[in-house]
Image 1 (cartoon, one colour):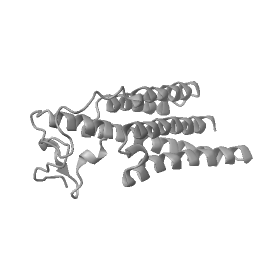
Image 2: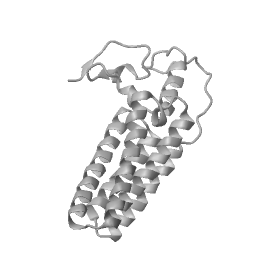
Image 3: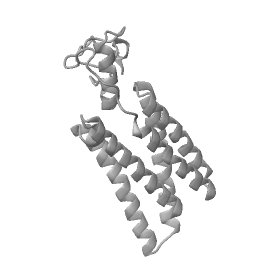
Image 4: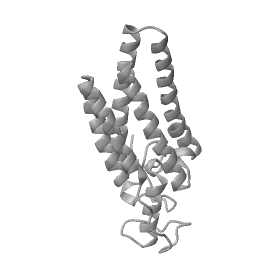
Length: 200
């Protein structure tokens, strides 16, 4: 399970957070925006943060406001749509996701990330459950086309996030503006896909 590892000066996590699951540091899950913030704190000699190679002290400008904080609010449309169609559990899950998404994009760390991932997983699982039930009940060309579009939106999100994570591109690009752009697009696509599940 989790174990404490030796302090790694190449890691942007504070020493107390340098835990690993099979040798994987949790700082990998942080966005580039947060990594830069942590590195800036490290360069300034904040307590508990090591000096990070490649991040000299006092050379960082303030990072522009995170657009993902605002794009997270778009999930409110899913909350409203689900309520109007009497899908109250779906609405509740999207309400939780909106809250966790706003929190993680305003205070990105290992713990808020875990909570947000749980909320995302809950929405995905329940959305898949609703989609499966609607496919069984409904039939016809229009239904099939919507299902195809829904699957495409899901695969797009997987591509931007999972593939981006593995290759450090898209949502995990080294350039903060590019990473935020693709994460913003992922928010829009996922919200649209779940809207289609409700309308199906």
